[in-house]
Length: 156
Image (cartoon, rainbow, N blue to C red):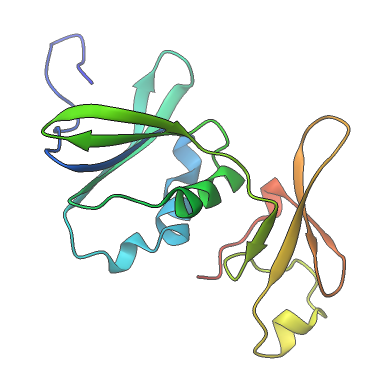
């Protein structure tokens, strides 16, 4: 990305994964979802970057790592418009949109404080549901409480 002064805001990577078109306020949730806080490869991320389409956006560049599609799809929970670019020799060789999986396990906290997953060492499981307005929500497998996108809290 270049600014009006033609300076790069974020350096290119030789090989790896670039996750672009992220809502700026979801950057750190995505870092948690992908477990990037434990990543040993070089990671570059930026937030509140200029975007013609979104106003402001965030971006994550992971040098030397190719994320699996299933792993990437988890970010659709908080960034449904994200695009994943696979980079080889400084060139984009593939662009993949994220898709919301049907089932989410172990990364989201149930909003029900009395849910067994909040009281016992039980991994959370959610079914992804879509409302009439196509807004995504999650239904807890154990207590059936609905968690809406804005309520999502990452536990990983």
